[in-house]
Amino acid sequence: MTPSSSVVDVYDLAASIGKDFEKLIELHGNDCVRAIMPKVISALETLESLANNNERENEEILTLQKTVERLEHEKQTRHLQTAKFEEELDQVEETYKKDINELRLMVKTLMSENKTLSTTVSSLPSAAESPTTAEEIRLMFELKEMSHKQKEEIKALQHDVEQYACEVENLQNSIEKLIRQNEELLRKNTSLQKQGRMIVEEKMEIIRRLEKTEETNIQLRRLLSDTDRVCKDLQQANQVDDEPRFTLAELREVLQEKNVLKGRVMELEEELENLRPGRKDREREDLDEPLKDDDGAEMLVYGPLPREPDEKLYPWKYERKDSGLPLLQGVWGEFVATTRFCDEQLAPSTMCGGKLNY
Image 1 (cartoon, one colour):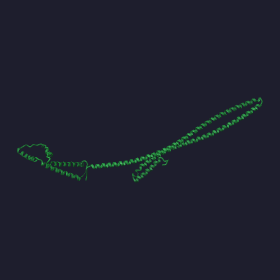
Image 2 (cartoon, helix red, strand yellow; image 1 turned 45 degrees about the horizontal axis):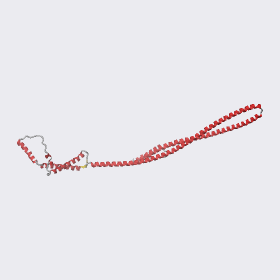
Image 3 (cartoon, helix red, strand yellow; image 1 turned 45 degrees about the vertical axis):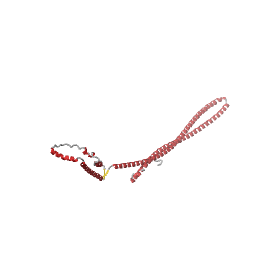
Image 4 (cartoon, one colour; image 1 turned 90 degrees about the vertical axis):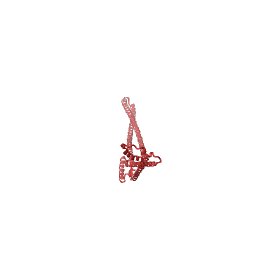
């Protein structure tokens, strides 16, 4: 970046870099420029800000140079004016000196003439004294008037010379003041340039720190994404582990065992009914009741049958401990538990979408 580069140059550079990136993306894909793209963008932004600062500083330098040139031009013009004024003043002084010398010579000549006239008047008789004295008196008055006028002119010229000297002194003071202002502006310009360099260096340091923080943020995001993915995988693995998994062959075996156990339970119930006391008496009564009906001509009663007693419905609760009914009860409990387990495992697979591994 040259000192004369502007923001337009930075934009042209960015456009050319963008075209180069497009060519690289077309040739090698987005991955080859993804890492370097933020750095290039930050560098271009830095160049843009530097170009803006450079333009502002160049404008300030141009304005300061213009003011310096203007002040130098004013200084030169005032110097020429003072030189011209001094020349004119010297000429006026010379002319005044010449006039004063001429007047002095004239006064001397007049004085010498006056002396000669006085001597001649003293030598002449009294009759001729009156016209000469009147003429001398007239000449003396004229000389006095001329000397008075010349004195007034000399005073006026001296006053003008003093005014010109005051103006020259004021001009010299203003020139010195402008020189001091110019030096102060130059000093401020150098200090501003130093501050600008320091600001640019601080900005570059901040940009480097930001790049480091962005890199750490990217690493932390990658680590966070990896941990999220691992957590999701673990959750999915736990969900998959919690889901019931049975093969079709296992379910068939369970159903077959269920059917076998059902048949076994039915056989055991029949054996239990056969082993119950009083069953033969009831069978005999059942056989005798038709005979009584035939013999006694009793009336048949229609209606719901009476409820069976609990001893008949739940005989294992009322049997003695030394009988074989607790064994039957244990077998029945195992059968019921197995049946419930099979029903629970089949219900999610058929109704709730459970998984069957074939």
